[in-house]
Image (cartoon, rainbow, N blue to C red; front, side, top):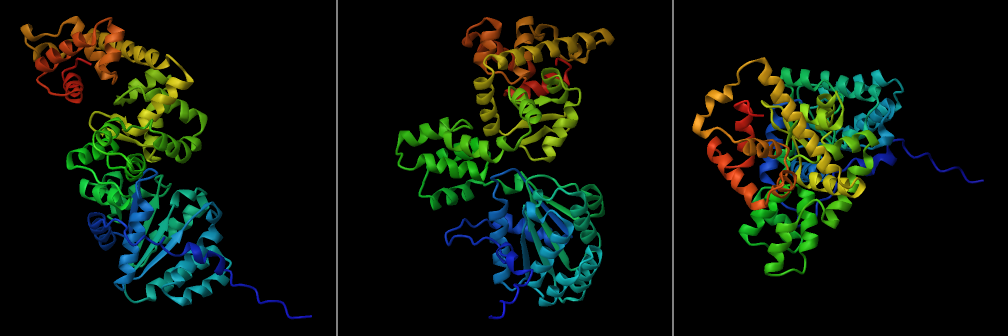
Length: 444
């Protein structure tokens, strides 16, 4: 009988997880993002790259890592998945990645004790000459407390020359605040990853789409620089010419079939029912605060829920930290609104009406406690009419002019007239400014 084949090394099955994904030869150069990453890893032990699905975290990091490797600056890459969410498996994979920089790390695979293996890895990295960068991609797949404890220990004991880059859809349950206060943490979020017009032009060109500057500006604004949104738009733009291109861009929303399919698969299908319903209900607003969210959803823990969703990068962000206002990414809001209308016809109007009642009741309660600053701030002749106040309350819910007209029993043109007078009296130029000013004056 022939001798059995020698057993494959334990590290071998993970080899495909230890290389940055190869960028296509015509990949979009993002020097702005590269510079942010270079600065972050130069000055901080941990760089957190945290953003929702489709923001180009893996693609941008892979291109950056490959450029560093080509220039002789070592980078170890780890592509995580759910199978790595166990301390021993995680440390073994980490050692395999470091072995690409220093073959001596392979010996750590034989160490069964997780603590000893981690200590051995840190000692090896400490003895190595020069800086070492380790990228952990898809960190959100690690959720076990003991696995994250192993990563926390590694960060807390990392040698001075070691840098860790954590790419994730969800802020991890790690001591980010402590690391932030210690100056050990750099954070790159959606704002850093958004495509600017030049990057968007290059991305679309790679997909065979060229747009006039003014049309491109509209598309970047509508997608808010969301990389996946730009690519999905390119799919719909192929073969279109002239006025058809402009018409498509102006109508491109979260209800586009490509966007709908992407967000449904990557986001909606991963939500638990309670989160799904909560997001459906707050999608009726352009912007909202926690009190309004609590009023329309019936959840007293609305602020805590919103904070959790923000940390989870569910296309939710703070529009104004000082005022505690939240907003959904326009495309995600469009998708949710369409889903709300399909699943629960008429509910959007009922939720908006509930928000208006909440605002009116809040104003009544405030008035009962003492004089409001608004009365002194707005001259007698410039005082808001009751109709204008009602329009303002609807405006604060994010309702469209058409919806306001329907609820107030007015024509859309009359609503426009009310809003124009309202803007003039408040000395503002937009809906957002009007709501912000009205809140500052105590009118909302």
